[in-house]
Image 1: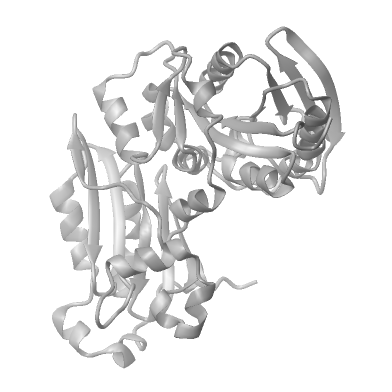
Image 2: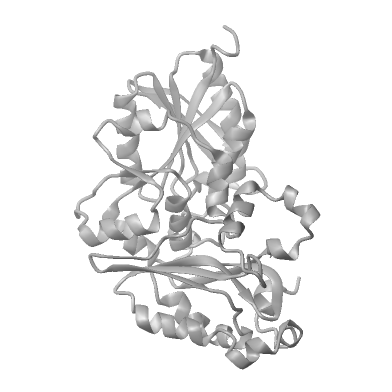
Length: 385
């Protein structure tokens, strides 16, 4: 059999909602004949092993285990995943291989691993399985993964909320499966506002499996997540769930923003975006908050801060995003933050955000004066090693 004949489409299905994930896998097995499912169980990683199971619609096909790599269960998964998929491709018996991710494994990292492997593997779909009734409870859960036995490594400091947020925001497909408590209109509105570009399929309808064979653009998915050009939620208000998309073209006063961080981190179920500080005018900063915890990071320079000769090395998606709102003085520097939540105090949030900006007189003083303002964010952006 030639390599072309051994082409094996690969789809990823992940999610912290384990029951929804298993239901989605069952749907795919029945809808796409010739599907095989590969799952790495990381629950026994504390014993130094990751267990692998391969099954199809008839039941188990094979099982095995792989040792931890660098005390990291996800590292072991990456080491074992591609060789096992290549073995399944060589076998030639399957039409679709589904990688069922363990609970806290995020799809973006595994998608990159599979795509990098190249032929005969072809990444054709990425989905997260979700119980809509649990979206708000999970986004509000600030517990560390380690506290609930879901950490992928001893150094894993992620929380349930931030992990879940990334799981639902990265894929192009959401597989919806209701549990014991049915979702209401507010649950559906929250999920729709958080993931406006994802296609949603009800588990059990038979559409999920074929959808995961249609193709997946890894570069476009990465661009959707990068703070410089992320496709953020739009203004919305539906069934008591509100999204505020806040955009301004002047910088934050670092001290006033720092003083408001606790309130801003807790005001919404989910907030994210990009922003700039007056004392760091060339640095594009990312904002990522869920479960009451906020992560602020530097993601490099604004496009306007780069010499034009370097623009060709920047992804096209970023150049396009920057051109849409290019300011004659500031270029792509901007505030673009989105806040999504049931019961959002929109007016109060607008007032608080605007109060953190430079005043008219501070703004008029100019960049040289801005950079002399106290550097309130050093602990976030310049940590002592």
